[in-house]
Amino acid sequence: MKKQTEQKQEQTEKKERFSVYIYPKTMELARKWCAEDNCASTSEFIEKAISFYSGYVSSGQNTDFFPRAVISTLKAIVRESEERQYSQLYRVAVELSVLMNVLAASNGFAGKDVRALRESCEEEVKRLNGTLRVEDAVRWQNS
Image 1 (cartoon, rainbow, N blue to C red):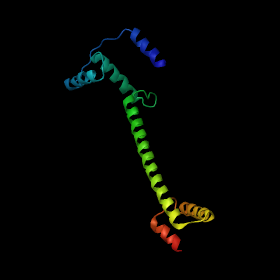
Image 2 (image 1 turned 135 degrees about the horizontal axis):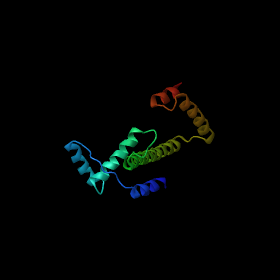
Image 3 (image 1 turned 45 degrees about the vertical axis):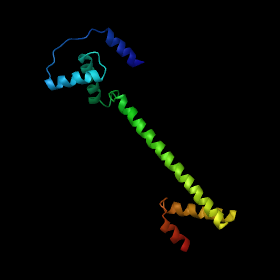
Image 4 (image 1 turned 90 degrees about the horizontal axis):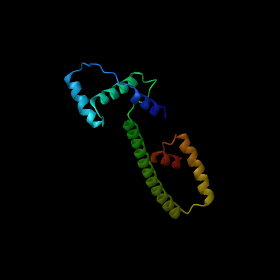
């Protein structure tokens, strides 16, 4: 809301005209990116650039200079990464379920034996800080 008020105020204010001396390459960049940024004029682009750079310089006071595109891109990257992780965790859970059912069917454990084994496994995983390897399990079973 505050930003809209500032924009309306800027529209009613009379703009100041002054000369700027810049290198031709810099002016070429301004003209090129002016069209890309959908600015009505090179002056509008330069005004936006000054606002952006002012925000950058005073970074602790004004965070509006971060382009929305950067923020939305970062959010999309995080979302995509989460989706891949969820997908992989689901696949691991399915494979683990298959493995547990094969073991249960082939070994015929009693319910109390499974509970005792679960408690022992939880203690072992905690002791190893979640980095259990097959070698650790073999060593544990043979001790």
